[in-house]
Amino acid sequence: MSKVFITGGTGYVGSRLIHEVIKEGKEAIVLTRSAEKARELKAKGVEAIVGDLQSDGVWQAAARQAEYIIHLAAPPTWGEKVTKKVATTFGKGHYEMTVRLLNHVNPATIKKIVYVAGTSFYGDTGSEVPRDSNYNGEPKGWGPYIAGSVHVLDRYLERGLPIVTAFPAQIYGPDSWMPQLFIKPLYEKKPVYSLKGYEPYFSPIHVEDTARACLFLTEQGIAGERYILCDDMPMSSKAFKRLIEQELQVTGKVREIPRWLCQLILGPVLTEYATAHTYFTNQRLKEIGFQFRYPTAVDGVPGVVQQWVANQAQTEGRGQ
Ligand SMILES: NC(=O)c1ccc[n+]([C@@H]2O[C@H](COP(=O)([O-])OP(=O)(O)OC[C@H]3O[C@@H](n4cnc5c(N)ncnc54)[C@H](OP(=O)(O)O)[C@@H]3O)[C@@H](O)[C@H]2O)c1
View 1 (tube, rainbow, N blue to C red):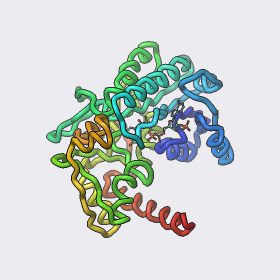
View 2 (view 1 turned 90 degrees about the vertical axis):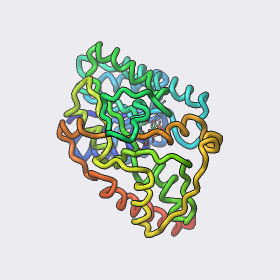
View 3 (view 1 turned 30 degrees about the horizontal axis):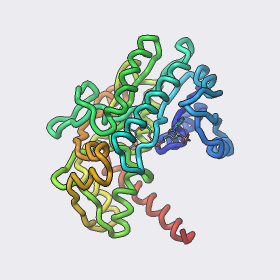
View 4 (view 1 turned 90 degrees about the horizontal axis):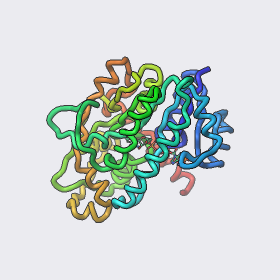
């Protein structure tokens, strides 16, 4: 049975990835810093190792023995105002995790490493033509803070590590930013915030397809290549919101805020991220044969909204 060592397996994408790995008859070995999460995984029959990518530990032996590695772990990016100082700390942590992991991989036994970055590395794509992973944009938002990690991968490729790099765009699903920014306010008839004067392109991808694509790349991804993970239909954030409204059968209110206020509330990094176009094509991923479960957000959004509403009803039923 193929063994897949997963960092970030307790996260938003990683928790779906574990299901997909098991479904394909492979063995998942999940790294987490939390002893409690490791116990929960073990109770579900998943092998878990407690460790921190920012320090030495038993995880290094597991990384050395792995046939496949999917690296999803990253310092937190969500939930607080992101000043340049916060982002710099994030960047340092991101880089440290990358090199400490890759320093402990055995080139003789590893078959593939799927390294997960993000499209902020490519910066603002503009809204004219969809870009692929050859696009040479200037990193924006989180991009400058993950660029060091993305560039250092070349050094490990030269050392013979078969690294495939994945760049997911906007990963939507029933947790993370989609409920927080869209579903919950629309459901509660509260306004959705939008930046005055900006209507950036979005390149959505369902969280399950993101997980499936990462696993697919362990087999079909070409070492040294970069793949954008997004679905077939980039759209504006307004169009994405409309899909949610249709499913909830509401017409939401929008509260437009000026850029300076966004800077004040969210900080410069998230403001830059929120104002940049993310207009990409998944051509390369399709060329190697990936098939989407949800080819567009039109296919994926209704199920996500229904799932969120069902979870919400359960929570409300428990009086929480
Ligand atoms: N979510 C998106 O919309 C999006 C979009 C584009 C790219 N991405 C990228 O995709 C990847 C996965 O994103 P996600 O949203 O699934 O992440 P997430 O939910 O924030 O999860 C982060 C994971 O990283 C692990 N982690 C953090 N610090 C660690 C450390 N020092 N050592 C070991 N593990 C550590 C956490 O594990 P424990 O807490 O259990 O230790 C957790 O499982 C990230 O690289 C992210 O930047 C995400």
